[in-house]
Image 1 (spheres, rainbow, N blue to C red):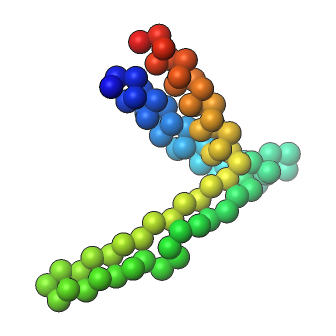
Image 2 (cartoon, rainbow, N blue to C red):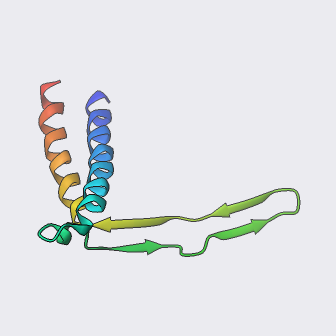
Length: 85
């Protein structure tokens, strides 16, 4: 259980830092390829109006090269760290 939480923490941190890295390097000449990616998901949210209650469902993913690379590195590092615990 503890190892799973450590892996989950590392993967979530990898996603956040990869997204940050992709946004930072978007305007840099030699590193702009890290920001290359695609968006997919529901472009407009699904709205369910029940009169008394309104529910809105939507999800969107923004993947870029930096997110994939940093998440894979974080996964490998997380596996290494979780073996030590």
